[in-house]
Every structure is written in structure tokens, then in C-alpha cells.
Length: 415
Image 1: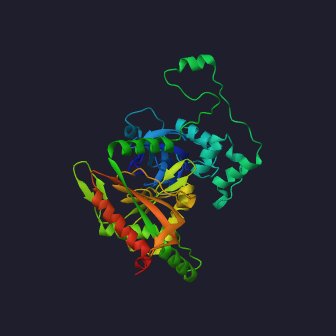
Image 2: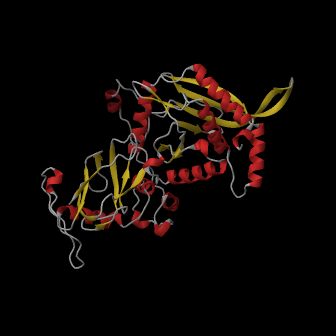
Image 3: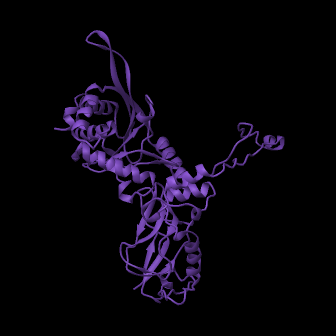
């Protein structure tokens, strides 16, 4: 019996998905787990595997189109099977199993055949396609260096470096235009308007909602990182080739502190506060067009080396926009670390539905008073953004005290 496949909800906040590419065409045989399509959610481009076995009878939208979650995406069933009733009686033509001597000729198949001819056989990452689209580059001219010749971000960027640079279009403002925009003045002169990507639109919407609905307050603490630096050096000397980062130590320390302060590991649910028993730490990763937060699950139960391996692997796939839905959803707390960019201190907007987010600055050498005398110390500033509906000032301060005590005696991370 033919099965209707609907646009899946691939992240907890996804409302619609953009179809980046089909990996099967109408008439193809499909097995459970086969890569059916790539879908751009509000957080990342994701592979969508077939939940059914049979033949792909119908495609509801071509590559480049968008569908709301739950809308008809495809139909899978037996070759030649009728499926019109699944689509609400819309006029469609049945597809047939592929025949070597004759191509499928249904209307849906024609759309898919054109798409296959132009892009589907050019295997590329969603990020590579997005950059190529923005720079007006044909992927057929790009040589892929990924697995099985797959085109990835670096391939497109290398081609851009080799290609002659074309100046971006410049829009000159005339006196007439200036006169018409008096009510909403903008800076005069030359400018370039860049269209918003799906990810940037969602980031703007979600963070605006967070800032407007969650009453934020901020607590900052300064942590002595002398012992953490020494401990990291010792660990890396013994655990080569694994190189533990300060971020790994912070993730582990945060997870340990969250176990002691469950109110920080909570979510506002409208009519109740949900204290999570599991500690799933989201780690913000910057990508070409925004920010994505892969999740280290059960971080309190993992060693530093396990956290290091997982964060490296997740961050690498995040930058290629190849994360799965369960790898970017379900966080109970988030860390945003800009220390590697030499940012001393900043505040971060809470990542819903978390109640808190920790902003981590750089480790800096500075003059301190130690044992009544001036000395040089290595200090790191962290700022906890809290949702005041869930967390009070004292609770946030106690969490920071625990985090500070762990990082200042880091032997507690490995015992």
C-alpha cells in the first residue's frame, strides 16, 4: 500500500523545510534508510532517509522549494500503484518502475529529470551549494575533494580564489530616492543589499523572541585559570595525540556544576518549570551563514577525551551542515565561547528552551594581588545569562561559584 511521506520536523523549532536536493528520482527503487533528500531546516542542512521501502511514485516539490512541516513531500509504494487519494484528490499521474529502454514520462518525473540533469548527480554539501549560489558559480565546474568526489565548502572557496573577482553591484542613491525615504532614513552613499538566508531569518526570529519573552539578567565571574592551564599541559603530554582544549574542560566543568544546581539545567514550559535530569550541553559553533548548536549528550558522564572527540566531530560536521536532527536538539544548557577570538567578555542571548547560557571569554594575563603582593595571573571571565522566570540571582551566583571552584581545582574533572 502506497505511503505518504510528509515534510518531517527535523529540529525542535522547525516550521518549514527547504528541499536542497533529491537523491532519488520518480520511479527509483527505495529501501528503508536510503538517502532520499537533503532538507534545509532552521538550523542546518540535513540528510533525510527513507522511512519506507518500495518505489518513489511522487515528488511533492522540486529542489529549491519550501514546504511547511507536515505537508506532502513524497509517495512511496508499489510500481504503478495509484496514490491520488493520498494527496487529497489533486491531479497527478501514476509513476512506473524504471525501464532501461524508456525514461519515466510523468509530469513529476519530468520535473525531477531536469533537476537530476542539473544538480542531483553533482554530489555536494548544502554549504557548498549555498556559497556557489551566492557567488553565481556552476557546481559542474567545481572539482570535489570530498568522499566519492563530493564537493565541499573548501572546493568552492578555492575556485573563488582562482577566479577573477567581479565587483559587487553598486546601488547609487539618487536625490529622488533620498526624498522618498525621509520617514525611514538610511546611511547615504554606496551599499550592497544581501538577501537573508533561511538560517539567518530563523536566527533573527528566535533570538528576537528569546530577548523579548525571557527576562534576561546577567552574572559575571572571573576565574583563576593557572591550575587549569597546568593540568591541561600535563594531560596533553600524557594523552597524545589527543589534545584537550580549554573548551573541553569548560564543557566538563559546566556539566558537573549543572548536576549540583538543577534549577540552572531547566526550561520554562509556560505553566511549569521543567528540571532536566539529563545534562545535555549545547556548544555554539560559528558557520558561514550563522550559528549552530550541536549537543553533547550526557556530558556529565563523559571523560575529557570523550568530550574532546565528540565536540571536534560535531563541530566539523556542523561547518559542513551535515548534522542529524538529534545532534542539534534537546540541549538543556548552552555554552558560547569566543575566547579563541580574544574577546575578553560578552553577554549571550538565551537559546530557547534553555533557562541559561554561559558566555566564555579569553584567558588573559593580568596584574593581580596574590598574598598581599602584585603578581601576574591568568584569568578568564564568564557571564551567565539567566531567564528570570526560572532562575533567581542567588541560584545563578551559586552555580558560578561551583563552576569557578571546579576550574580552579581541575583535578576534580578527572576524579
